[in-house]
Length: 158
Picture 1: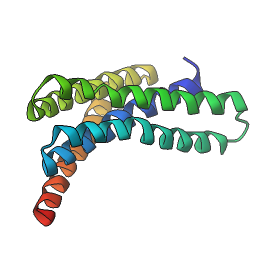
Picture 2: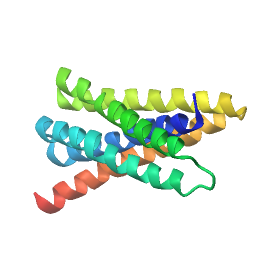
Picture 3: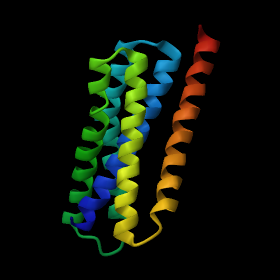
């Protein structure tokens, strides 16, 4: 995979999984509404994918000696992969009751982060254990913080 597409893939995957899980957990904690969680996922899948692809576009464009093709490949692949990895979390929400769907989504998300971390560690020939633990801990921090923010919002505004 070309460097520019790999940038888009890894950023889109990571942001898609972590941002969507954080949003789902927070919205579930504050609303416990399937409708609201689905609306949040769809919004993240499209709007945040556009925003992140713009951010990657500017980041790659700011690098010295980066050609236009690399910039647009990174931009479009970021959008595509963020859209895909955010959208997959709609499936458990549509199939299962909300609480179970959120838990299943967390497990799916942790597995995706685990698998990508393992792949990256092997690609870069570094300790897989360290990379996997680091990435899973950061993902779990986002999930936990989102949970408490959702409860805080519920306590303040309910």
